[in-house]
Length: 433
Image (cartoon, rainbow, N blue to C red; front, side, top):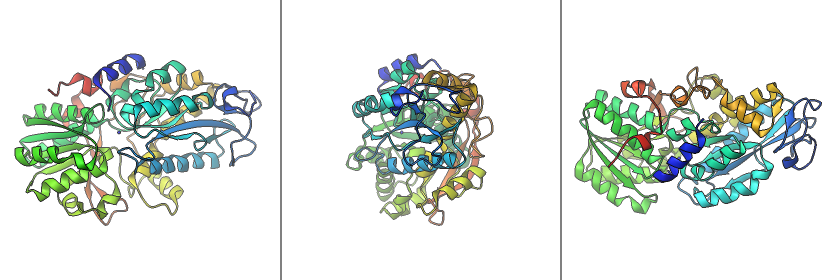
């Protein structure tokens, strides 16, 4: 939301934290007082909100057609477009509007495709408004760092805590799994936990967090990897039904999660399921698994769902208009806040070059998420442990909620995540066997 271990190590090592119509040529803003280079023009954006402004171009690499998050990608894109439209309606940044629609590309949740389309748009963008997927992002992050291209990831792997050019938002898969297992031990008196997950630094990160929390709580732990595709979940279901853990932490795409939960419950499993952030989609309420999800599944969310009462949520809902409520739209909105903060800081410093934006983003000590994330979130200046958000919003499935989930436990922070020191990516630190 996963890359091979060696790739993760290489990426971890790499990150340690003028006026022309061609965006590659740069342009001037506010009378030329701001330095610019790639992806910034003095000419207005296409269909500009502010025709007297220049234009900042941000690219997007998302799963739009065939990957496990193809149902999510377009909605995430819509959320970020709504966010930046609001920014432009408020006057833009430093004399520039921000365009996030000109360079949207389909990465198919495939590392090779991601690198290909990234190279296509790289000469024309200042940064990336979205790069979806841990394995796809891992395929380009070394080049991002080498070129000072700042990116907002659509994902929560703990690797991002240690990448200077990555502006992550919210708790990692690792931290949210820790919170989920702590909660299950205390609330459900769980004695055993199983992690069912995709291989790599999405699922592996969540499984590592579940393993750490299981050990801290004295619980038995089992680790089950699975492959994307609803037809590929029979082995995972068989493991759940055979071993009967008290709680299962699922880290897959939404359709695969629903298959796992629905088939396990149908086979007589009576334990609980806790789903990582990317596992939920409101469309699952219309699936055959809906009764099982309502009875047995809870979402480990990075922030409150659509209906949450905060200034940021209210602004998002207003900007969404008649858009069908969807948690992925909200995610596209939230993931955009740190890029906005970095662009504002770079513009204030008079340097909207790639290097200037990278310098500004690495110096951020907080980001204003308008109440969506805890105060102090977005501390990228003081190392991975300081950047780590440790609170989770635990939600129940509810057909009455706009996006099918409603908060059951707000600001959940268990003792495991609270006391854990993030010194390297969890999936590298923890041996899952």
